[in-house]
Length: 314
Image (cartoon, rainbow, N blue to C red):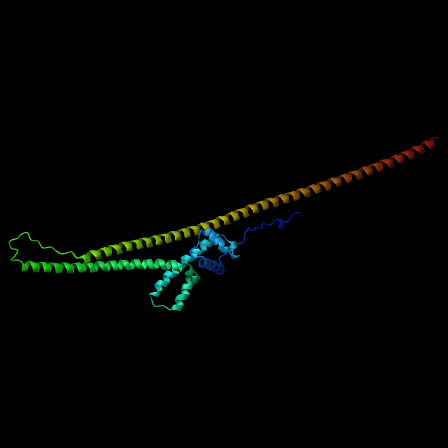
């Protein structure tokens, strides 16, 4: 007979549960740094899948997950590194305890040193471009101020010279009413204006490039958030599917259990009926044997009496 323990529900996972621990994350970032150092410019190239598949061949723990999970983990670390880098730059402007600042930096970004070697150069270029843009804007603004001041001085001196010349030659030009006073145009003003225009154009180009990079970073962050939500949704869906399968299995188990109990009851009833039938047959046989024995006894008595009667008559 089947027992309840033999049909107890058991859920087996095809793949073991993978969790991102600090040691596994450090191994992933270390392997990424080694790959980037040995092959510069190959971060997530030619594709992210090929890049992370190549890295995972050197670590058995990373082989338990997929390339998409590794990509999301690296991007999460990159976001935390950018936040830590911004905080570090802002904290350098204020007098703080270096030890406490470093502890807080490691708290918000545990693998800051490794991430700085991976993404630090890229962020340095972005910061330099932003600084150059800010410097060019300041220079252009100062040049405009200097040019305005120079133009005003030259215009004033030209006006004074013209008026003086007009006063000196007033007697010589009384008969000529068409004489007009002209103000000379400085060549240095033209050169300064041209250099300002060039700097403005350069500043606009750098600002446009910086805005494009900022926009790309925002898109990457939104994409990362979307992929994170998608991953969480997939996990929830898989958990819901597992729960549904578990419920279906439990229902099938209960149905099977009821069927077995029903079969067991039917088997018991069948055995009981067979025993009752056999008992009735045995009773019937005993009764028949008893009746037959009584019949033979009566016949014998009758035969004896009949013989004795005949003898007497004789």
